Length: 128
Image (cartoon, rainbow, N blue to C red):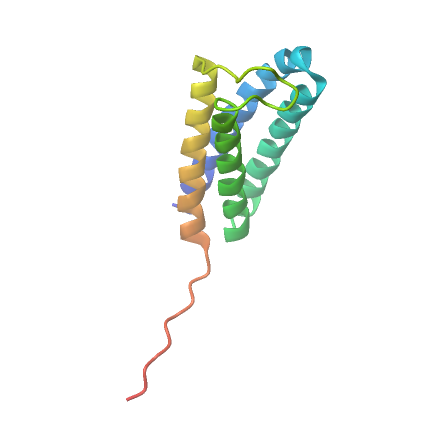
């Protein structure tokens, strides 16, 4: 059962990484910093996916939650305010919604994996 929980977040992260890898050249054409950010995000996704598959401990799962949440929030913010160096906000498009969908699923899956792998501290016993 734990293996199935590990594969879900990995699959979603790898889909998101592949989509972002495909978008990196377009972002490099727009600005070098944007392309570097997308390339770094692909590497980050791959590292988190490998860590979850090889060692599904609570801290790794929590890192997966933080990474996914950070990317979702950054995407949402740049639909409200322009990214650094840009004059206009980014547009909502289908590929963006698909990547955010995979990241949301990965976030939920990592949260579930974190819940399954975290160390449980027993409640103190009351003495009567």
